[in-house]
Length: 136
Image (cartoon, rainbow, N blue to C red):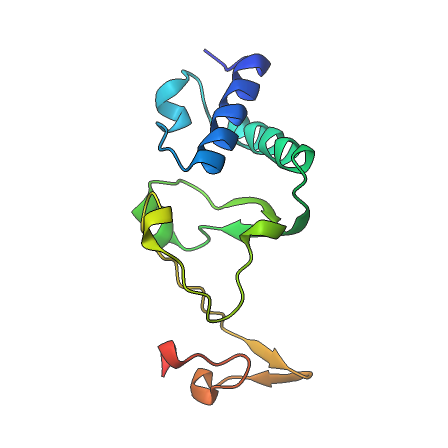
């Protein structure tokens, strides 16, 4: 049974509320019969609309879960994508309290190529803007 549009909007409101209150909610696939990838993207757009209505600004977009390993860890079957909002950015060195996280999972992003002022950097131990002490 496919999700109705009203159910997609209801799911988006629940996700939006969960982010604001940091309250855990059951996955949409357990709450709604027929929740599939197409519904997920529709729900994601509704969440974006709610965020923007609340004053958030879309600052970019992200493709996630692009590695098979991360998909297997999360149970996803394909990569995902979505909007990145202005309140999701942290300055380098910002400390984040673990108490604000529901699921403490870190995905390390490590690119195969990095560029600095037009030059390709292949040595991640370079410690420059593209390097990181975590890879040293």
